[in-house]
Image (cartoon, rainbow, N blue to C red; front, side, top):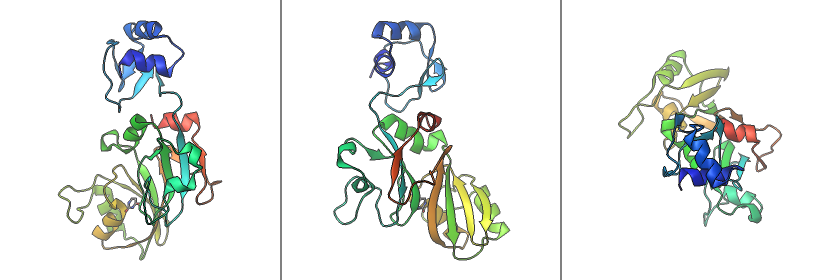
Length: 230
Ligand code: URA
């Protein structure tokens, strides 16, 4: 979609007014001023008008407290999916922004906005995800330091990016990572000789799982939560 069309569709401005705002340097793409009204958007850019992040109208942004046993997929012939937990009339074009394993619980984001979900999940945007990890044995200080520096994962040539470890209880930590590799937390714990017994995502960026949501419940994100991930 062209930039001026995107601005006209996502604000009250007409196409002509959108072009003028672009010409005045009021529009940024990925924090850089863009004065080309005919610039083509690939779909994953952060577009803002006078500093306010924009998204197309009619998009949906939800958080769910994912229960265990539910798969992060739109369809699955063998298991219930996160979308099965929502009323059918709101699931059109909805997809998951950052999957969780079937046995992982907690914060799952769902949206119709492909650009937004790309920003949440792209390793380039560095969006931190925090997990409460229950381990089968206490984490040593040495292991925590290894995780904070980055560890080598089995069958993966690149070490993990530095993570943050926060001790909660003897066998329970909060781990913050900014990547989303396959089974990443479980593999990181295996890399330091431990084992995950339970995994619960509590936060993505500044969006916290609403503790009023029981497992399987969902709510719309507030505009503030949505824009904090824009
Ligand atoms: N890391 C995992 O190992 N599993 C998840 O579900 C999420 C992160």
